[in-house]
Amino acid sequence: MAPCCAIRGCSLHSFGNDRNPLLGFLKIFVTPACLAGSSLTSETIGKHMKSVQKATAFESDPRDLSAKSEESYGELAPEYYCAHRHPTCANFDLLQDALLDTLRPLVSKDGFYVEVGCGKGRLDRLAERATVVLTDISDCMLGLARQRTRGRVRCERMNVFKPHFTDGTVDGVFGFLADPFNHGAFFQNSHRMLSEGGRLVVTLPNHEWAVAVRTALGQPIDQTTFINCQGRKVTAPSITRPRIEQIALMKAIGYDVQSTWALSLNSLAIGRPTPSHHVILAAQRLALDPLTAPLVDVFVAAKI
Ligand SMILES: C[S@@+](CC[C@H](N)C(=O)[O-])C[C@H]1O[C@@H](n2cnc3c(N)ncnc32)[C@H](O)[C@@H]1O
Image (cartoon, rainbow, N blue to C red; front, top):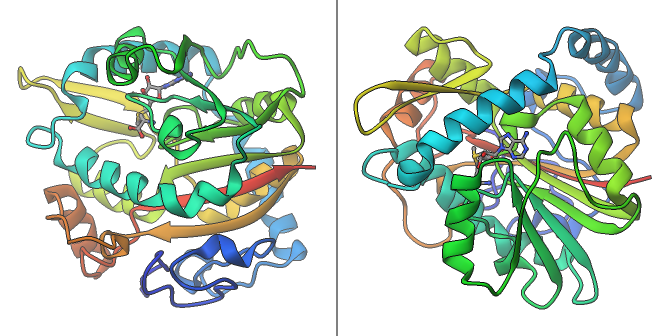
């Protein structure tokens, strides 16, 4: 399978330059690996919409997803960002941080932006001069954001399935690693919160990577498993989809998906992190180099 494109070394359909995919706005670029040879026409998306609509009917209840996430991430919060204990999280964290410069053109200093499922949070570093609210369902995760931002940034507890912002008032919703709540109801709620033309930016673990690693470990493909500091397994919901199905879901809810691309460890401009055991395991199954294997998919969409 060919590697998906990354910020650096973007192999196809890049309409900007390969360091900043957003310069090529209003175009979706995807890789043959992700689309299995199909091109991204409205006809192709339409076909996938049918399967997405069918699939979402069987998705978990948002109440179950949020209860499970609150419990699991609450327990993991004190150690989630410990690179030694959770090296895959650390690989993913570096990739998201590297994304900030690419996303910066999406925010304006007069805008109002919300980060959902923020963990320790990063939107304040992307939109330094704008009004930003960091939100998470887990008080413990939100505690990390509060600790980091020391009263400089609003931090509010919010379940994405019960958002408390007034409809049409938010200029951008950002969710980094939104897999615990990658459900139609989240996209609907965000759509309501957004102003006309407001942006939704989400990153998700790449589906092919997630399936490869979870299959190798004999785990359900819609869950992620952590071994906590006491050696106990902690599982959390983690919904990933082939990229074309993810796009179809978002389009069905009323988004214009403007840009999507995949990140791999060789996307990082400075240095090369050591791929975690799970990155290497999945890459082996996919017959890819761990440095070029797609790990995180990025979606930039606008409310229409
Ligand atoms: C995979 S972590 C990512 C954290 C952070 N965005 C990052 O990139 O480091 C997912 C986060 O989503 C939060 N979360 C899970 N379900 C949620 C929900 N229903 N509403 C709000 N936050 C949720 C978790 O508490 C956790 O902080």
